[in-house]
Length: 60
Image (tube, rainbow, N blue to C red):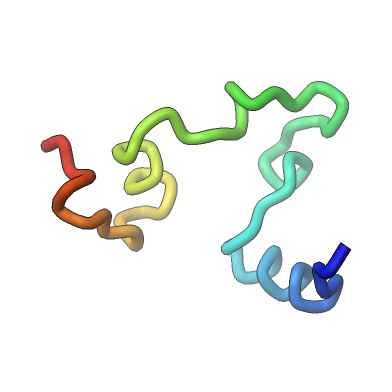
């Protein structure tokens, strides 16, 4: 309820925030398994290497 729609729109445009439809998934069909990262490796891959997890989270 405290979200600022203009800030959210800016974050979506920059690719920082993505809604299901931004990923080509219908909102009604979206499931957590389709949208959520399952591992730190997923986060690193999805960010194209921009996310550098702290050493304690690295499993490689």
